[in-house]
Image 1 (cartoon, rainbow, N blue to C red):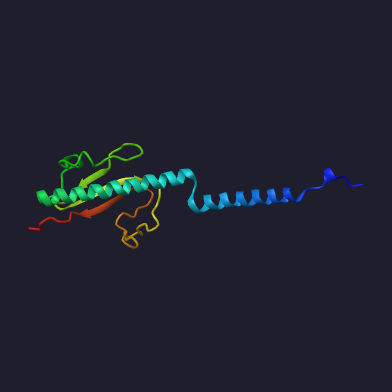
Image 2: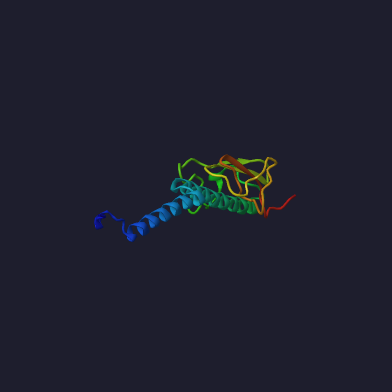
Length: 149
């Protein structure tokens, strides 16, 4: 008395299984890689680190020429065309503080924590040069290439 239309065909089971596998794959990808918003924040932080690294190189160049770090970021002569001193997301300027004739501090506000974030003593894993925590984080640097009198 069974009607042919009441039976579930094998193709339906395959489609259901494929849908479940696809859904699990998407969930796993989000768990591993983060949501699109988290990925965007990580990319912005990577951009911040690149900009801070460029600023540090420009400060080192300035210090090599003038035997001191600049008094302010806008004081980096001739670097304005290629150097960004503002956050890529909100346009606020990076914090810069001259802490000595050959030392300085660069600060930015980060959205994420790097995998090798500094511990409570400020030490970081592997090179750790630009490792940071989420929130406002500062990097204390010594200008390289300057003569020490």
